[in-house]
Image (cartoon, rainbow, N blue to C red):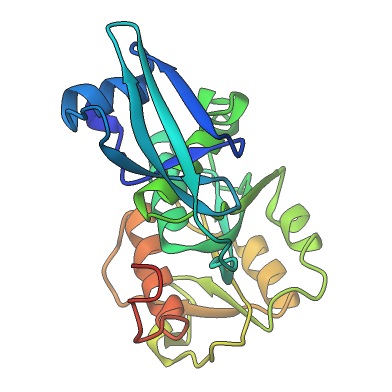
Amino acid sequence: MPLADFSLNLLLLEQKLSRLCLSRKDHRAVHLCEVLRVKIDDEIDLAHKNGPRGKGTVSILSEETLELTIRWLPPHPCDLLPVHLVVGFARPQTCRKILEQASALGVKKFSFFQAEKGDPSYPKSRLWTSEEWSERIDRGVEQAFATFVPSCETYGSLLDALGELENEGLQRIAMDNYEASAPLSVVKQNAETSIVLALGPERGWSANEREQLRSHRFELRHLGNRVLRLETAVVASLSVVLKDYWTTDVSEDS
């Protein structure tokens, strides 16, 4: 993994360890040593996935090994926001950006689906046939200095994805530049509302998919008359939807 692709605001661990030993060839050790230039007794921030944060103190630093002694902080509540993002499969590079950026913003769940206008080769890419999709989510969580990780499922069609919603989402919104009756800014919600936010693939919804959305109680909304890249539309839509969940007190976890 190139250094330019790796941000270490926080190191997310699969296990709650008391010590972490890394080979100097490990991309995390490379970043710590060559970018952050850590020394003995330096501290870095880390976290147990879906658990507490902690502090890792550099206790061993040799030509072969970097070892951290870990002190765990008290548990904190889950800070994922009650937003389920439903997105049509797009080019792998676009989906990588969506996974990272939406995870950083705190969505609770992803559902990616094969859209009628989508390229059928997209879900066969390395992003989805390996564990890279999970790594991209982790990277977004690390970037946000968070610990809780959103879930992610994939589906063969929009109808398959919608069929899994059951009673989820007190409010259901689908972004659409062509048949939406109002901008997203007029949608009202409060901090207790769970939301399902759906965006089609890069070529947009089919007529059949619009009917499926309407039959599953989705309201169509737009972001103005400009044509946006899918990853831009995702971040812009989430910013509007999530603003009512954000509090004015940002000092709690600092």
